Image 1: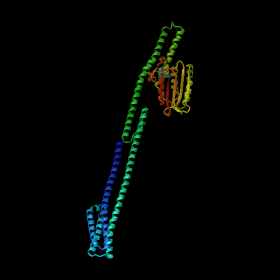
Image 2: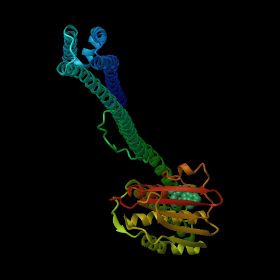
Image 3: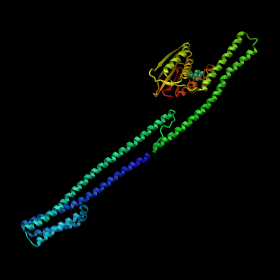
Image 4: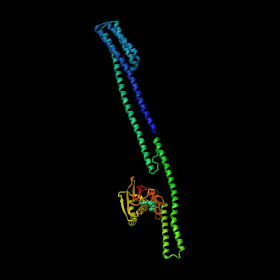
Length: 464
Ligand SMILES: Nc1ncnc2c1ncn2[C@@H]1O[C@H](COP(=O)(O)OP(=O)(O)O)[C@@H](O)[C@H]1O
Ligand SMILES: [Mg+2]
């Protein structure tokens, strides 16, 4: 269900609850009003009945016949007020009580008529009249008292229901807002997670959303986008491969042309001037041919490394030992180039899966570049430490060499990009890049011309 619909539904529910409570309150109020009206009438009647009984008592005390007529008057008044208010009385206490009231009043009235007709003040007459009067009055008073009690009950019950309704609506509103905001927050969190993962280049679908609300469709839309991005990335990688194939072909042609031309020229000279050349010259020419051939071999070897990145043979290894063994390979080069080396190896690093031969090749490439950038000597720092994300390790190779001009930085990993002329093939970094990517790692560079260059390799701890 959409969040919008949930909000509307919960509001409708709360509204219905308030409406019901309101209707209940109005109904109770009407009942209370009816009872009040009855109590007013009943109070008048009670007063009237009380006066009758006082007159009745006076008659038996003083025997004044006039008092009996007064009682008759009061009975008439009572009868007419009962007649006027009969609807209200029926509504409040029912038709049964009304007819009982009427019959008690009638009994009393007949009793008074009888005493008027046969005046007597003996004990029997007195007892009869008094009983009739008492019954009438007690009935009327009890009914009034009961109605008053009922009215109080209704008011108390209304108060209670109102209180429950108030808390009910409040709790419901709080629960619904909590639920909805929780839902929004958790959806936002998973969207945040998704976008972070996507921004890290991982286009896997994070979470197929099953909910049918707005966030569900948002998450699904992001999933679609992520899938689209992953297709695009594949396309880009494909077109990059094609592009680098072009560069590669052009580069190979260019790289090989120079030494081949040289060889061809020297071979020509050798045959053309064979007779006039001395032994030294012949050896010199042939040595140059040999050197050019070696150069071609070097290019072809780098090229093979580049074009056929061998399947990495991953084995658990301690990166610090790998670095130590690599240092032995390059120690001589560092010594003759007048370079001080500093190692900063973190001891507590986890073992990682890597192809030792390939990682050594990367380190040798980086160190060779560093040495070549410090032709007048300098400082080389090699360090290891836990990666920033916690599930990786970082290797740093830092030199105090000439640095890389910012305009070259985007190209140093391109195949055949070299600033060293015949001194380099421009394949070292692109081969290294391929190896690190094969290890699901990352290689970055930071450089300041005149200050130095730092290469950082990040390798995941769990990559197999
Ligand atoms: N440590 C470094 N200091 C300065 N420049 C560097 C460094 N490492 C690489 N470079 C630059 O990047 C280019 C490409 O390096 P690389 O791929 O190893 O090829 P090559 O070393 O054969 O030139 C180098 O020619 C150089 O200009
Ligand atoms: Mg190099």
